[in-house]
Length: 215
Ligand code: E4P
Image (tube, rainbow, N blue to C red; front, side, top):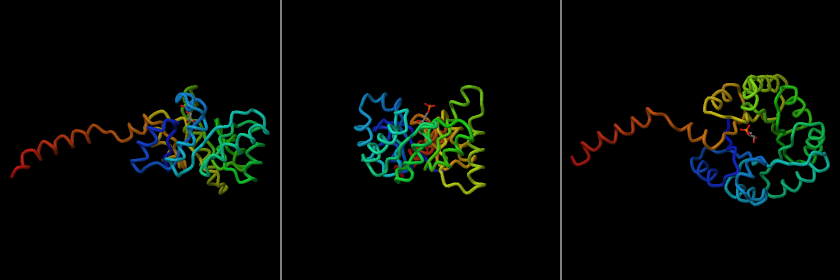
């Protein structure tokens, strides 16, 4: 499973990219607005850091508007794909954009049926939102499992991005469910590295090394 970072913060993207674990980035209007910068400025800078796929979200509600925005966003850098919301207008946009060769990420997906439609329309990626389903008392990861199972059965090539992940166990569960990609918030990525036994082990090795370093 590939790891994407779910942020528009370029300092965080740079830091995690240095670890050599980053395969891509997803953004959305809420994440960009936290940075207080324009969408274009953020995307240009992110594209200068990351060579893998970068998702940028269209905000139009009508098909023509989505297509216009998608062409503009995709022209910023060749690794940008366009997030399109799961609506009838969005499906029509994804279908036309896929024929134009513009990569899409169908977003705000909350059911296997929505994912099936996204794949049928030609989406490159589909993003089931796990945390937001958990928030309303549903089992978000069960939806990821269902989608992966159905896509595998029919050999569908749309890649499943487990999104709206809230804690490290979500990442493990997404990997076990067979998601192609997990898009992970910065704070969760940092917590994935940490383990108290690692810290205790390092401390002990350093203490013991102190005893022999001058021998
Ligand atoms: C992913 O593509 C979305 O931008 C993101 O994962 C949404 O996460 P949230 O539900 O924590 O806002």
